[in-house]
Image 1 (cartoon, helix red, strand yellow):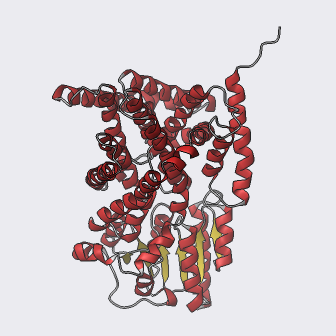
Image 2 (image 1 turned 90 degrees about the vertical axis):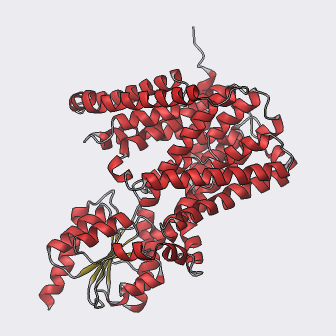
Image 3 (image 1 turned 60 degrees about the vertical axis):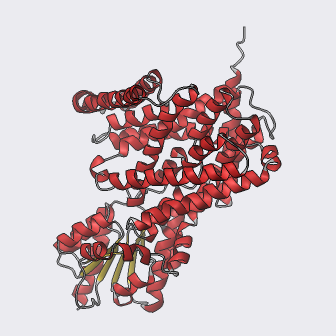
Length: 553
């Protein structure tokens, strides 16, 4: 007797096959892979597609694991020592944004006659997508940047607010009481306490043993993740919160990078299902029927909300590029909107057409995010010509000046290092030990302050700011080292340097082979892809160049 396979296997197969084919087209057209997965969902989905998915609810449950495993990997990489200086900024700026966005969202919803639903729309519009933002930050290696840490802190704050809001929406007649708030806090503290205990007393010995066998290390990590998923579900929290706390419980061990590598394929597999599921829920009929409402709310999410974020952090003194990156990165709806909207729909508080509108709004805004993130540097350069950055300098004139350590006499025939975090930091340490004449350009105020206290010439600013390039005397340098994660910014600096100083040698870091090719075309002499070459090999190339110059003189 032949046993027929479960229909859900065919559903998963359709998702993977269509996503794979469209991913090739996306790669050829240089489009984000996420867009390919969403389009695959539209094509095979039940609303406008071929209707190939027969178990949509089951697939939807599987897609939630995409969020779980992504947040698990984020938790693994978190170092709270790096968050201590941005935690207050994330909390205060994020809270202020939520209040402003909520009030504006409520006002817009009221204009369209949504009545009491405007309160819920205001809350939902204030939230951003933990899934898409963290995936982009991880893919672009920006998780440990200044804007990356602030964005992650904001997202965690928003997720906590969403978690608190969910039980309220399940019982419309329920009011926020001291007992309710206390129970939420106690349950949350309890989960974190378990994670801390495991991290301090259980995992140190277990992981030492498990690290000897890759499969044991892998299954230990996955088992821990599902333990916290179950605990979160029992405590009435989102399972995504459980995934994040599971990652935290295994963070700061020598094996966390290996664990992240082992679970990488699993994370990407479920992420594909997640984004395809988003595509299945787009309803173009609702968008067409309620187009004025849709376009107003969409523009609010992708333009007004990022502007609110940017202005808040600009006034807090974080500079134009950091503020711009935070704003452009958080300009989308949240996956929590699906859960909250569903609770509202089940409770009879949300009409079917508004439910479909919200789902389509979130999906379209999420699909737009990679394009806004891709164009953020161009947007920043456009606004920097308007001297928008001066707002931050006018509000915090002393703080920026005090953290810099800049030579009184203009440097010539010197080395310039753009970016001093991780790889750049090792290069700076080498140059200092060798007594080289060099200067660092960095936009993380923590790093600028630390380097300045060590007596290292450091300027706070963005690499593609013309005033900064003149200040550091780029056009009279003999060697430029670019360790920035952005190929477009590095290309800008390379072209500027080579245009006025053809003899300058330029070493640059690339995130991928495609970026490396782009930097070589811009005029770089040596391009390093960290995935294939370590920082020590870069230092050897720098040493070879500098010693060669010395011998010639």
